[in-house]
Image 1 (cartoon, rainbow, N blue to C red):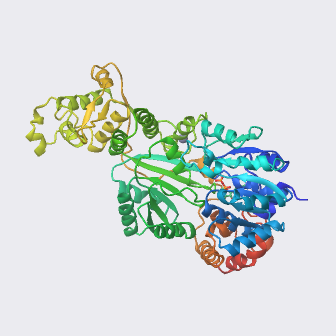
Image 2: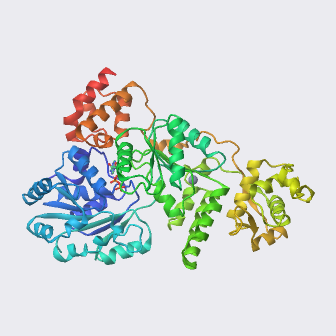
Image 3: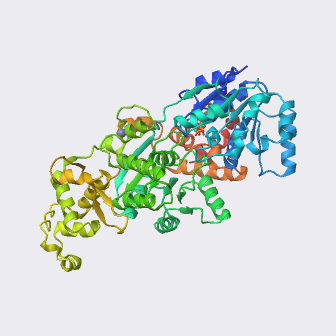
Amino acid sequence: MQTGLQLLNTVFGYPAFRGAQTEIIAHVAAGGDALVLMPTGGGKSLCYQIPALLREGCAVVISPLIALMQDQVAALTEAGVNAAVLNSSLDAQAAYQTERDFADAKLDLLYVAPERLMTPRFLALLGRAKLALFAIDEAHCVSQWGHDFRPEYIQLSVLHEQFPGVPRIALTATADELTRAEIIARLQLEDARVFISSFDRPNIHYAIAGKHNARDQLLEFIRTNHAGEAGIVYCLSRKKVEETAGWLSAAGIPALPYHAGLDAQTRARHQQRFVNEDGVVIVATIAFGMGIDKPDVRFVAHLDLPKSIEAYYQETGRAGRDGLPADAWMAYGLGDVVQQRRMIDESEANETFKRVSYGKLDALVGLAEAAGCRRVRLLAYFGEASTPCGNCDNCLKPPRVWNGTETAQKALSCVYRTGQRFGAGHLIDILRGNFTERVRRFHHDELTTFSVGADLTDRQWRAVFRQLIALGFLEADAEAYGAFKLTDAARDVLKGEITVSFRAEAERPRKRERSRKAAFVSGLHSPVAGPLLDALRAWRHATAREHGVPAYVVFHDSTLEAIAATRPRTLDDLRGMSGIGAKKLERYGEALLTIAREN
Ligand code: ADP
Ligand code: ZN
């Protein structure tokens, strides 16, 4: 009999387990129950796929996401594993055939939607089969307070009652304590061993830039770091999604919009292209992402501020599931804070909810304004202690912090003297001494603050106002659009009782520099662009199309890059390369060698 490690090598083509996989697999393979908390891309699937192959009988995997189940089954089938799926997308004939295969013990893994599982017919079928284990994916869907609640998940406790001898493994990437407790209670996992992995995503480089000209900044970011690569750009509104996709396309970057206002067919088509083709950028509202398993998303960009650190972590987490370097990049400006606060102000929610929302927003703004390591702050928010990462913008290029007490006083005093009725644009004109029509009309050139701030540029002043809001000295007026008011805390600044520090704006966005650590993390990922890689990509595209599966199901980027870098000549050279298992070697080995010879 093969060991877990042997299966990892021969079936999946990977040299070694990652993190807690070894322990989890041993525990479940021996018949234990487990609750697994691992971040996106951590490698949860293998935690039940390998025990499924080690144990006798068929593993039943419960997943709420149809697209995801299909991709997983496609990938397993490519690797030579007997896997199938039962969900509403199948016609009656195909569903019947799958049930027959299951009953005849021809399957190692069967993926089912929870509503199908709960039918008396299917439960009866389960009763007659030999079961290896139950895997409950996206287990946080059982949480009534979570954002992904699925009522059918509640009934999954039936599994334990009806099949007490079959081990269960529940998996999720949702971190918080409350959800964890709820999963344990509702799924009766009191005796399960809990495996909590670090939520760090070391291959993700975090960067948050001051927003000046979002278009140019995003274009520059994509062109210098991610030309020809897949990415997601998040915007707040449908309109902005459409516009952004439009100008990205006009600039020669293949970009597609995705939001709830598009019809289902268009959405499905755009998602398909993003998943199946190389180098497509999707521009989306937060409606996009859940259930998309694409491993080679190289960047996630935010043109608008999310609502909370949880949302930011979840959205940026869609980058780099394959463990190769990826970017989480956000442009953040004065308008963002004002807008998000307004949205909370104007929402119908009760006071408690608003207070919680403000708190969450403040934590995110704190992250955006932080001068220290982004990752340390991010992980601390989830209760994890860490040391500076060396792979975020602030670690790589520590921002200058300056004593801005006097500058803050000028700005706040300007707000006060103009009657707390104006927004940043006009205030900055006064501070910088610009004789605009508006300045003349209100005689604001006669104020003592007129022209006292000519030493700072417009951009620097905007950053100052943004930070004054983030620090809680100014607030957006709920009645007068765009106007700032002083808060109580502003008085202490004006009286000189507290010192204010500002983070200096980088004057010019620059190509991101990778640290040694990042280069180390990237390992193989030295770009090996050239005709061979292009030819391998083209072959992968054609093969994926022929098999009706996404390109990454055939091979990951990292595998193609390794082939391009090492130019294998024999099947033995290919054997043991990461991502090439026995089945794929047999099926594709000769084709790969021919391409390597000819290009
Ligand atoms: P999750 O479900 O936790 O988000 P997946 O199970 O989809 O993550 O795994 C993420 C990626 O990492 C997949 O492409 C998978 O093939 C790869 N992977 C998982 N475990 C390993 C390993 N031990 N070695 C190499 N690659 C791995
Ligand atoms: Zn850092």
